[in-house]
Length: 117
Image 1 (cartoon, helix red, strand yellow):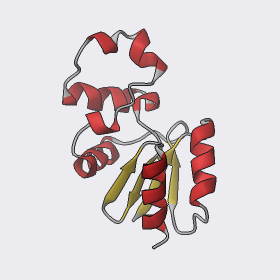
Image 2 (spheres, one colour):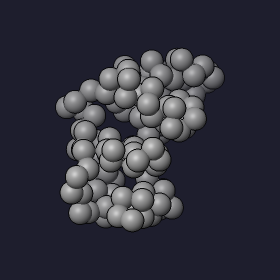
Image 3 (cartoon, rainbow, N blue to C red):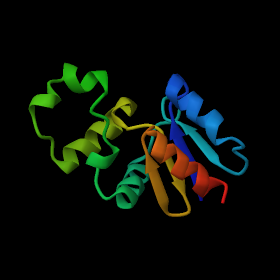
């Protein structure tokens, strides 16, 4: 399975999708218009090893809610990711059991290699 969870309103996600093209046979899920299911988030966590690896501490809501002053548990991080898409570190790219999370240059290059091997 090849799938990319992204945000259509995010310029960084748009740039990365262009970089990863062609996207033939890859399922794209805009997490703003198609909410992630608990099963999808659990699958991501199983591949990434933790909810913390999937969690974006750069989300505006993170500071607004004062979460930077707390140490949320794994289950709290999962609930936050499910509650609001902005907490998912984007994009999340899944390629045949491998997961690539975030937008670092190295991560994007590794995902591109896996997508087009």
